[in-house]
Each structure stands twice: as structure tokens, then as C-alpha cells.
Length: 277
Image 1 (cartoon, helix red, strand yellow):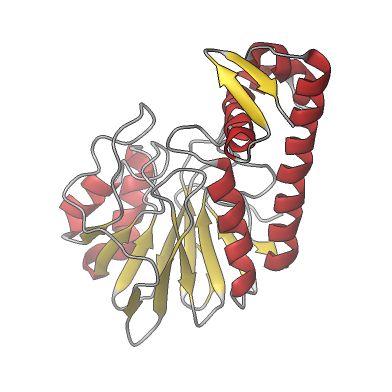
Image 2: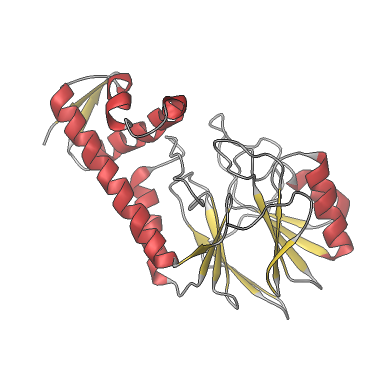
């Protein structure tokens, strides 16, 4: 495991550096990773939270060479620093904005939308946008083609699985987006939290298998418990997860249940869920 020195750029390849914000915690691991691509004309992916020391470190590192600020998504640990960094550098804001479901960053405004498969090419690098909805509807990963490195935001995290929060989060879309990663020739995943991940295809397959295994656990629990609310299912389905995380786990459980409904395997009446297959 690499070290995550706050305020210090860590070189990952000759063209990619990582700066980690000091916002470590149960949901953010060592902190939110910001990625700097290039040296002459720099692109920044995920400026992170509004923490003065992190913003200062980013601005000091890029000076007047920062031209583009991309965000993978607008959750509050990934995009809020964009406004201050853009004001200090004049860089263009790029990222997709969705209605605020209570979890989005309201300060990320006046940004240019990014389309799936859109490319930014410079003399130093090519950055390709890969639309990966699921964790949240506006999630985009960014492929650094020369390094075959995919910056994954919260699509894939180092050391843990991500929470899927409906309605902006969608479990069926998330699994399809994981499957899409198998179409790309990759050497590393660069997650929004945690260290570089080797064997990207193996990790994608592991995560798909994990989600489908959890889905089977949801349907099995619902078959035994009978019609019931989510609160009844959480301690059964997530008996392998610390109880302090059950509030967030309930959100992913909700996403699993909605997928079962879409698949015709469950129904819901108010807050009561019933297995139908």
C-alpha cells in the first residue's frame, strides 16, 4: 500500500500525479484523490472537498498551467473545491450536473457537460471520458490512454465497495458499467479513494460477482422473512458489515431491491417489499 502524504504530489507515471485530500474516514478511506495529468497544460480530475490546505496544494502545484478541471461526479467529497481552484487558475470546469437529491454539490455550476467517449488530446496525453452511471447517474470515469490507466472516481474504490443511493444511484446500471470496463485495455485503476489497483479486469469481475452474491442474499432473506420493510432485511443481508455502517448499507439494499423489482422478482407496496419469483 502506498503512502498518502497530504499536500504532496505523488508521481504515479511520468505524466500522472496524485494529491490526496485530508478527509479520511469510513466512507473516504485515506481521503479523496485528485489526479493531475500532464505538466505543460494540465488537466485535474476531481479537485475534492473544500479544505484550504488541499486547495492551496493543488494551486501551488499547477500554478498557471492548469487548463481543465474534470469531475467524475458531483458528490460532496469530489467536486466542491472546483470553484476555488477554477477561480485561482482560470481553468475550464467540465462535468455533468444532475438535480440535487440531497447528496450533490450545489456549488458545481456553469460547467461544460462531458459526453461519453469524448476525448481531450494534448501533446502529452489523451484523456477519454467513459460514462459509468450506477454509483450516481452523472458518474464518468476518465481513461488516460497512454498509460492505460482509468481514473474511476467512486465507480471503483480501493479497499471497499461503493454505496449505491437511489434514485440517482442505480444497481442495474452500476453492474452494466462494471461490465463495460471489460471492453477496455487497462493496466491500472486509479480510484477516488485508495491506492492504484492492478489487474483491472479481475477487479471488475470480482465486484460484479460481489454485487450479484449480495443480490442473492437479498432475495434469500426476503424469501425467509416474507413481506417486510428494509429495516428488517438490513441486519440479515449485511450481517458481515459493521453495524455502524448499516445506515449507509440500507441505501445499497434499497438499490438491490429496486433492481429485483425491475427484474420482475419482487414488488413493493409502500415500505413493504415482497419476493414474487
